[in-house]
Amino acid sequence: MAQDTVRQVTVLGATGSIGRSTLDVIARHPRDYRVFALTGHSRLAELERLCLEHRPRFAVVPETVAARTLQGSLRAAGLATRVLAGEGGLCEVAAHPEVDAVMAAIVGAAGLGPTLAAVRAGKRVLLANKEALVMSGALFMQAVQEHGAQLLPIDSEHNAIFQCMPGDYGRGLAPVGVRRILLTASGGPFRCWPLERIAEATPQQACSHPNWAMGRKISVDSASMMNKGLELIEACWLFDARPAQVEVVIHPQSVIHSLVDYVDGSVLAQLGNPDMRTPIAHALAWPRRIDSGVAPLDLFAIARLDFEAPDVRRFPCLQLARQAAEAGGTLPALLNAANEVAVAAFLDERIRFPDIACMIEAVLNALPGEPVDQLERVFAADRQARDVAQAWLQRFGR
Ligand code: NAD
Ligand code: MG
Image (cartoon, rainbow, N blue to C red; front, side, top):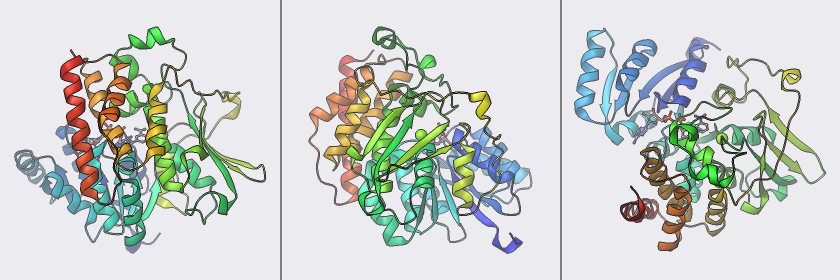
């Protein structure tokens, strides 16, 4: 690629697991990609280190005091990086006219505003922040259409499905000859645990994923299988599928990242080592292919691929998410917000692992779903669900 086609990339959530993998891929291709902006919410010393390494035009931190501190140290190091603060800063670097691609890798509902800002500015949006799409599904996809944004999935399963779908998808599965999507799941660290043992699980056990090293929130989601529930909703929006057309398949090796089942009996799959740099490199360069630093797949070393049906009795979050997907409206936003509060409470050791599903169910029973016609309704549902979840926590938590 010539020098004048260098792509400027904003990395939202640069200090996280996906953020760091993204910077690793970018650093392998200095003539093709340049870091335009880096953002971080905590671990600001790490953000400073990343700024010194990648020399971005902008950095964004949560508030103005932290911004002044970081600005001072970057200036002292001879960097011209401008440091911005808060959600306004995040939206500014997501939508900046000089930016080509935005990696949306903030975790949770906090990522919705900045991710939508990138969409509305018509950017190439590399979507890791699944919670944003789960919350605002229809409005998000409408904004992608209206503003001509290019939405590329980073979630390994959705990136795999994207690679296996025909080019002209997006108006239901039937018109493109697809029968169903097979969404693979590792089953998480508790896949073989009996219910009684799961009931006593600690945060550390929940965060010890067998195949992937990820942030703590998504690690707990993988242990509860809420991650697969959120991904089911994500798949419905990305590929215009009905929930019943998405089947969850447990595949403990995490080598097949998902499959697409066609009406003629063909089933296409994408395989690879479980390393997020593959979907990141794919989405950055699409439709080209670039080196991601991921080792080639060694099928002889893997030797076998196993498949199981999920057990909703031990993993009720999967069922709660499927119900929310079918009900639609604000239900997925309520589910997501309740889950965020529950996961944080579990990590703080205020509730036990099975209480995550109990809290979410209590929130969904307490709040009626509503149709979503504007974003304000989504944010209102998010706030209401957090309030009900906090009240539940006061009553039943430690
Ligand atoms: P992480 O916890 O490692 O990183 C999260 C990032 O978001 C950090 O940079 C953090 O500073 C920032 N952040 C947190 N709260 C914020 C707030 N309130 N405002 C602004 N920034 C905030 O998480 P991760 O594992 O990198 O996951 C990021 C997203 O990618 C999640 O939505 C997750 O579901 C998705 N994802 C991750 C993986 C993975 O392998 N890690 C795989 C698929 C999808
Ligand atoms: Mg995934």
